[in-house]
Image (cartoon, rainbow, N blue to C red):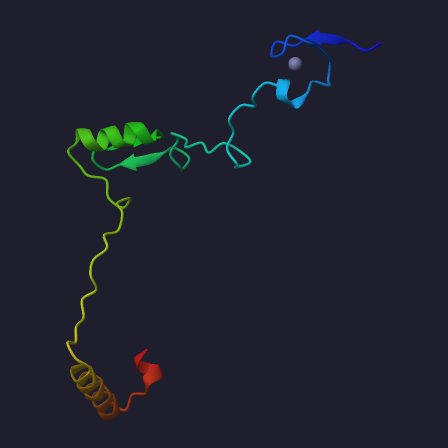
Length: 118
Ligand SMILES: [Zn+2]
């Protein structure tokens, strides 16, 4: 025997399991990723990471960073690279050609090949 349920959206009766799509609840907002992206507080290693300023091991990223700040230190290595204009050593190709020629001449005097120099 079919069971019906009173719809809270349109006030009509719908068969259980056959609710029209326009009467269904909005699905929870979800990411397109198959799983949520979770950033854990746990540091790697068996006993965490040794902090050279506090002389203690930490297994929490938050406590590690707090100890870094407490000791007046700066964490490096996660900064974004700066876009610097490329410096050209040679202002013109003649200087470059002269340098290459001098290097080749030096290598020939020493009896070296290009493979040995690499
Ligand atoms: Zn309905």
